[in-house]
Length: 493
Image (cartoon, helix red, strand yellow):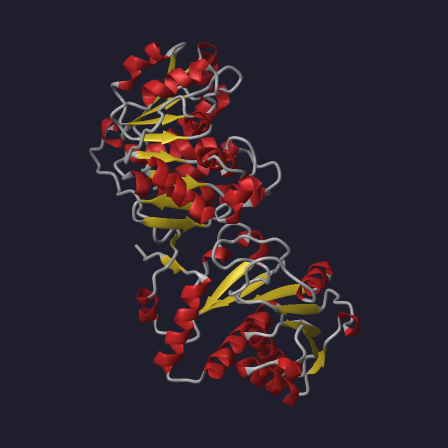
């Protein structure tokens, strides 16, 4: 199993830069030239037929990287022009030295957007306006430059980070939308969560020769897991039997929402759980037995009728289709006190946020799986506040309720007692009803197979997203939650 990748704040990356320069015993301009060269190599690999390059440079080190790229393009006799947001005579330090390097190579530098030709499809635009130190709202002339970049026809490479995107939390107002981001020294959390996945395009990491040992010297904000770094299930012995792989009880499916609970039950089964029970409204039994006869479906009309069903399972998933009526509140109240691990989703979270059911309850053995809206309700804030710092929101929910918290999104965050993990998997086609119900069932099914809640959360999020990617090979639009089920089964082995 590979180790996860550390994700850093802007402040931590600046410290890594300083330590890298000291460890390599090189001047800072040499590291800047390494960065520019690495970005230029990726530009040529991605767009080998580029006819011209436009480089948008700011006044700091990010702009200096841009001037280096422009100089290298000129050396290759690729037509290149630099738009300078800060007049060259006002530059200082390494940025000034990089600008002079570009001038020596004959790079044409303009200081007005009116002097730039329109970028067509044969043009590659390099965004070197703002680096990781940016925070707040864009101001002129940078804001005008970003608007120009985003309206252009050219492909866009962002140097280190798209201008306008927060390296710390992925928040963004006006920001560059890039096709490729080449980032250096330390991976930034903001590239992988919040607006980061939508703005960065493909992310390529270059360590610029920094010793790997340096990464352990600086505290990261989060750890990034992928399919190689999550714990997988052990192979089954030849004499295995169903009771060894967990009994999952799914509780949910109020009137009109029976499909949600059934999808959670079926995904728990497809993830390998040995036995699946479903407690739902009586009118959903026929559909459940028809759709998935392997599920042991039970009609319940009250919390009292649920009570006997709580004695057998090894893990209980509550929430898919649960609703917020008294029926759902009764079921959550009973299931929430069961002495087995829990997975809570959807209206179980909304009811928990309301404070009338399970008020003040903290459990180390439950997994909460909110999307942005549910996270906002759990914290008593609005969605914009969650979006402004998803990592902080996930951590705040975990501190309030304990256990493991999965904050779902393009960069899903998993908060736990030891910190925060991030997993990038899935695709925009998964923005459709029922996807969260599948994740609930998968995580419950993995807990039933003896993974800890945290291990089940990590593997479950990756499995869910990767199954979505495989299902989307036939197209993202029109992708249904149930399209993922056969891929879940293939991936879980």
